[in-house]
Length: 387
Image 1 (tube, one colour):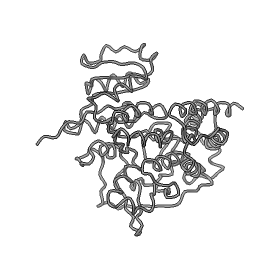
Image 2 (image 1 turned 45 degrees about the vertical axis):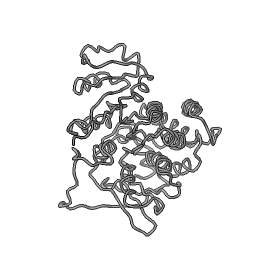
Image 3 (image 1 turned 120 degrees about the vertical axis):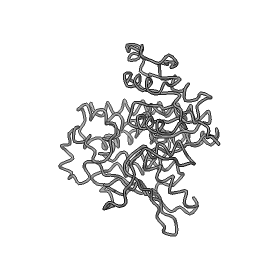
Image 4 (image 1 turned 45 degrees about the horizontal axis):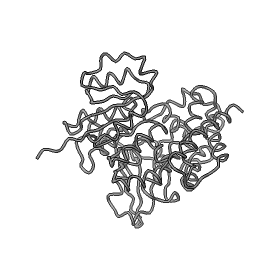
């Protein structure tokens, strides 16, 4: 019996996750059909992708950029849509089965929300969706019959390991962290970090924002918050360990002391594919672990004095409400200012702490109020940097 084709839309197709998703789709033997691609300003790459896969739609969200670009090479069967609202249109279209949510930052929330409202399966690579609006998103998914499957390697590993036991027997989740390029750095060395040094990740090939988050370990703070809502686990049962090889992607511990882990080389194509093939497992174009080779796996606790973002993540996960949206927006702005030379690396997390502490916390915001707090936090961070 032939398997039904799964129609996918890739939100953020020109980024690293989007490009890997296209590789997975190409290797799927026709089981995945790409209906839509979206990008912000990378119009040339978006056009090249459209020429390769010939989707039904391409969306360019930056209107001035899209209007200046020459789209003459677009396939005849592909419709060009321009503007942010078009993302919501394609993500909620009746013909779409799976939405791969890989737009970096808070910009990815509206498209993900539109997909959830229509009961889609969401392959979630945009951790900021749950950081900003975890309770609202998970409630809406349950209400609308949507399925949220994690693409982050850490959360995919937890999701896979949890299938080996009963949820009521779970004791804790352990997220692994490579430690980034500065895991052994002294406080004095961190004071003089350059942009080039921060972008030199020892294991993963990621975009600049996520790479800087890995260097500050803010990525683990955001992942703690994401795991708290995705798996409905109290923050005090979510731990972080440093694992520089990035082979064990996360672990779960059950109450009898059994610890289960998911292992694979650091290649995002595996968790991307599993989110789209679930509950099936398909042959995957990702690299495979060769256990015939000598393999060392090291684990150590993070130094939370040098990397205070982890404690910040636990705090925000406990508070909920508007705290996640404020932290996320403050961090996005701080990282952007570091990348353009306006903020020191070592000041990113303290600046986020200052903005978080200065906001009027609301324990039960609406979605629109979260976007208002997002905008406020960005303005406040700019004011803090300029002070």
